[in-house]
Length: 292
Image (tube, rainbow, N blue to C red):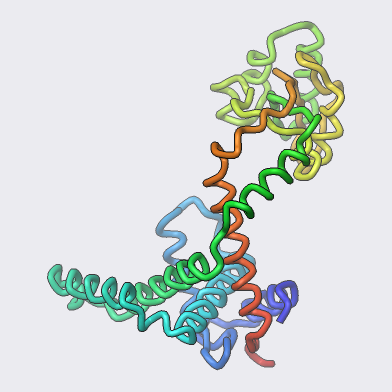
C-alpha cells in the first residue's frame, strides 16, 4: 500500500472510530485497536503537556507510527533477529533488573515489557540494516562532492527577523529601519517572538540561499538580492504572520572539509537506507483499515 494512500486510510480509520475500543487497522493479520492509540496519546501528553488538544490528525499520526513499529517488529522476527545473542542478552539483563527492582510485580508491567521487547526489536532491525547495508567511505565522499557542487558559487546569509501577526506593526518596523534605527532595537520593539525580544531577532546561524529557495520560497525571493545591511521594503505575509527580514551578513557558502562532516553524512545516508527498507516492507504488507 503506497504511503499517501495509507495515510488517508489511517485518518479515515481514526475518524470512523467510536469511544469503545475497536480495531482500527490490521497489519499482516495483527490488529491495532483504538486502545493502543489511546496509550500513545496519553504517553505523548505526559511527555509534553503543551501539545495541542487531542485531535483526529494527532491520532492519525500516532496510528501511522504504531503501524510502522508493528511492521518493523514483524520483519525483525521474520529475520529471526529475536534469536540473536545480543537481543537475548539485553532482554535477560532487563528482566533481571526488573525483577530486582520489583517492577515485574507492579500493575502495567506486562504492557511495559511488551513495549520494551518491541523497542528492542526495532533497534535490532536498525542494527541489521547498518550491518548488511553499510555506508562506505566512497558513498559518503560522493555525497560530499554532490554537496560541494550544489553550493558552489552560492551565498549564505545571516538573517534578522521581525515576525508579527499585525501588518501595521511590520510596516512600522520598516519605517523605523528606513529612519536608520538599529535592527535589534526595532525587533525587540515590534516582534511577537519572545526570543527575538531578548536577542534582537538576528539568527546566529547562516542560511544558504539555496536552502531558503527550497524550504521557504517567499523569504528567498524577498532576500536573495539584498546586500548586507539591507532589509525587505514591504512585509512578507504567510499563514497570518507578517515578516520583515534583514541581512546582517552575506558571504560565500562556507563548505566544511569532508572529515568535518563525514560522520554526519554517514548517519544521514544510513537513515535514508533505513527509511527505504521500512518503505519496502510497507509496500509488500497487507494493511487493512477497519471496515475494508
